[in-house]
Length: 168
Length: 299
Image (cartoon, rainbow over all chains, first blue to last red; front, side):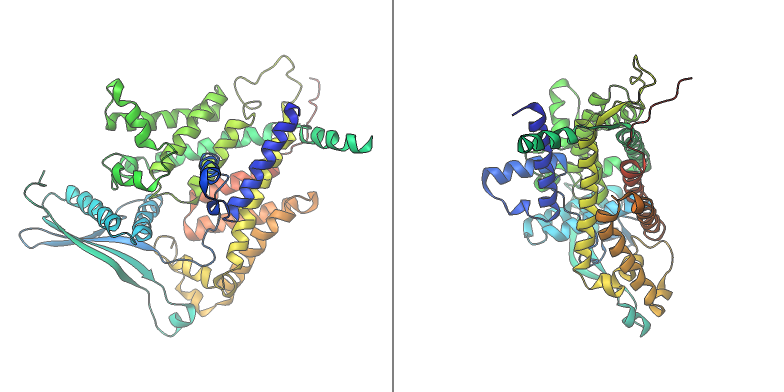
């Protein structure tokens, strides 16, 4: 088998993986072969699936924070507050990631704690932060015509208190 | 005799020389778009990717494939050199920007492409909590710029002893990228077509109403559901049809214009400017830059 034949075979295999990845078939392979394929997929992008906004559009998720000071002052903000649209989109995906890992209590707690630590770091005057992961509930067009309006529904919430040990 | 010749002819067909300009266009355009994007999010890069970012490395490490190096892996590799985590991230991000610029300009394209791809992959891997589709696409096509001969045209190094002879590459390289782009559109279209929302207009309504994507107040669309319904159908036709109608010469230009129009709409009504920019660039480079080899006229 010549060099050219090998190159064509390699490209054909690569394209077969692209099709398998787009069809979400690669992740069904287990064992060492599956692991090597997924490794190659991650490096080359051959295993990506392209189900953008499909089969249906999922709700937007966000992290909302309610910060309180020892003096009783309260303020609210989201991760996206004051950020550009591109950065806001990426920060919004963080909330989506927490939703994805939420099945595991330890992971959900760790991610929420990371968000809380970040906000307490940005607001040294606050001693308590409540983290809410919320989803945007958008009525259908028919419901909207009948007067229904969108709203944020809370999915998870956790409250974190700054202890004297964690004070900067 | 005929059966022995057929595979040889097929092999030769894969290595037929076509212009290197489509790949060169991608080599110039994609890194420039990634550079603009890097500058766009530069104020928040450390929040998204730093060791003390919003999500610390200890947690992002849990989300990534342990075999694929992330930014923390590379930063930790620099620790023995006395480079701290914060300085390492700054250094790696600067290296990423530098390699993108070098790739776009065509300086040592293979090395630049390797650096750009490795660092982009590291960013995507460690930033998996905040990445989205366009990061995947950029990784895929940076990989192609690395493995295919992307430095044969439009570089400072591509001047040869035969300046009137156009630079070429094997057609197989171009066909693989074109086929991949078609798979992307076909998969995106078919997945959408399996959902009811894309047939009754609700998908368009939901997307343009979400705060993350809303660029205009389009609440009035609810009173005219035929508009989002039609937009949903057009999206399905353009995406599914792309895989078939971008190839014939007679429909290529029309379908390219339709796909570009679709992405301009996405940029305008959903604010996904970077994603749209990458998709438009891919269609322009892979299907609109002529692939036939032109003999340049004598001066």
